[in-house]
Image 1 (cartoon, rainbow, N blue to C red):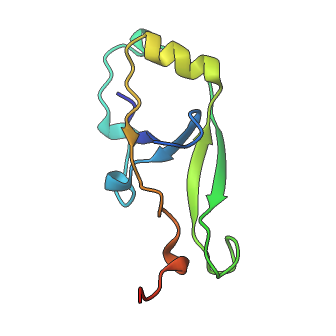
Image 2 (cartoon, helix red, strand yellow; image 1 turned 90 degrees about the vertical axis):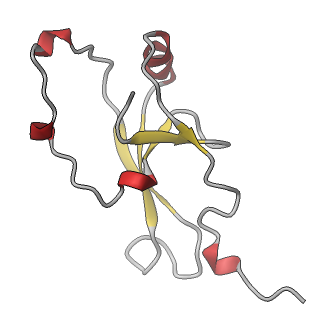
Length: 106
């Protein structure tokens, strides 16, 4: 299993996000025990970026939040899945990031 990265349901399949359950956790490589690094498969690299969460406050740096994402190639995702590496898919709901659009229902 890929830890702590997840995919969002109904989103770009090759964009990986930090699992919200672990977003405030400190993840340290020294906590991971590996007897033989040669046994670990290498799948490639991901590209880091940020996706602004829609709000009325503007983009990142102007008070709005942003989701951190790592974009991987489709072939890398396919290889991971073929090898049995699980990349969890979570449903964040269609209202994810839509906090600025709330209002009274009359």
